[in-house]
Length: 176
Image (cartoon, rainbow, N blue to C red; front, side, top):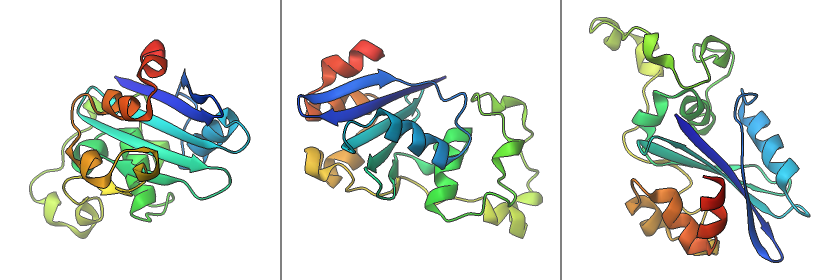
């Protein structure tokens, strides 16, 4: 089960809205969703969390390229949305073996078979590996009060802690 929310910066602080990821198949779709929520090309943060196992943040500042952070790349890789963000971070081609058209984007990939031990050593399996631990831009929230060190130390209630640092806990909890 995913929780996803958009936090858009405004002159009065942050405005939150929950977001439905059903129509999101690519990072471009997610960025378009964020830009639609933006007020005057201000910063928009997209929070994605899967059952306190991992969280991701996509930061969109106007027309700049999005910045991405994932708390736990191996856990996120098991998720279609996490996999989509990992592929972007690692520069993988969408037309390759990780094509999102082959994934079930509702987060229920439980029916997919695990690779046999012999297959784990093949070059194709190696292409699907991800670095252990966090992945992405660890400094994407420094200017809003969440240091790299603090971001890397977050776990289970990470999104609530980030919202607290941004001063918008009530706004985020209202959409949770």
